[in-house]
Length: 312
Length: 202
Image (tube, rainbow over all chains, first blue to last red; front, side, top):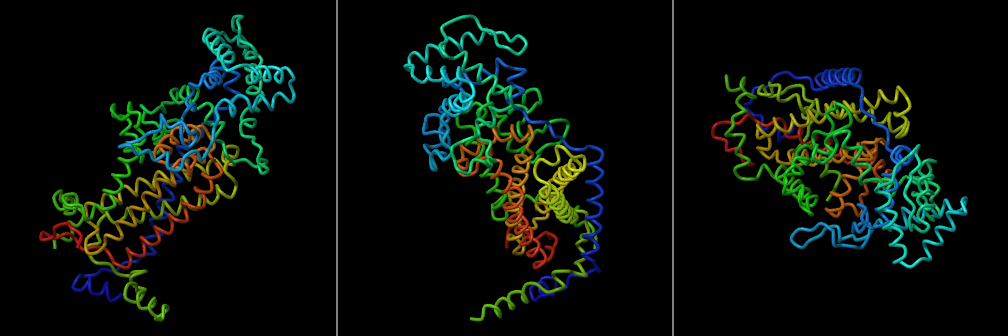
């Protein structure tokens, strides 16, 4: 042994041991256990939720996603950093908002990115969409607001018949053509691609799904999550689809979201994040934290662990 | 100063072949509590092997291949066993006050490995390219953004998440685990608590 271990284990009786044999036996047993678990229980793989399905089976919810964006009341509207510069909703504690430090690193303009840009691509192959888009862009902001308000209200009372959205006649300007264009784009399966495309010379390869994910993160995703018991009040991301244990090691994290004062706080995410960082620091420095580092001595579990030693 | 000679001296003082690959142990190392560390390590090895197979075939292979789905199941259950053993390891080491006699380094390095494991599992869920990935990405982004991390770590940028999951974090995690093991073997197993011990770091 080294000088250090020679000194530490002086006068301690030793027994024969085989590290490699023990390691191989444990690895073998653990491997068999995992293989058996995988054979019996398999693993979850719930398919993705795509715009095509939403546009086909929930066309009104699909269109409401876009009208909410035009109304400025979607989850991404005025989100703040890192997506835009509007900081009034940014979470802060004691006047400090960490999100502001790096600012807008992933710029998102909800109306342009989720409505105008995909329609601009569709307009290349559909001149009606081009005409409507021009009409929308050239209208005054007041006029646009009237159309959007009227269409949005009408959509609340709309019916879907054979996948087609029927709304009562009204003053909607170019919105019916635009919305129908977005609906067709969704049904064709091309919406996600249209959202991802940008003018970068390297855009042929795109592994960034920020925009397609942000678009339906609100009511649509929540509705799917609710049906699968994956909402925040159901311990959120610590859960998993199906009857699987999920990421149970996140239970302490999910737990704090169950406390009413945190779950309703506008700064809840920041509060829980800081609590978790604090708990980690407690664990990290536990050997030198008074009282906590004496708990093992008090609870005496060590007497069970080393019971053979104490019997000597 | 001869750096090579100095390094030789540090290794000689802290690690012999008998320390690294022991053929004898103190007799107090005779409890089920000692098995959780090696179970954790075995499960980690299993997860790395299945992860290499999954990475070699690409992130979407397992959706469309029975063999791929089975390897994914092995990876999934490997992670469950890993975290179960890790938690048992952490709890037993806590009740043994295993940080005594200068072993606080082992505790601290282990804690960093624990935190990295959680981050690795988190990016794994985000890399599944299924509904769970979609939902976790949009839910978790708010916490990341609130903490100011979202400005450079984007849960919805699958390219970034995937390279973190299959390369960056595993390399750092395995390095931490390796250092943890070196320190464990260099110091040897901590002596049992005696009545006069206070449980504090010495």
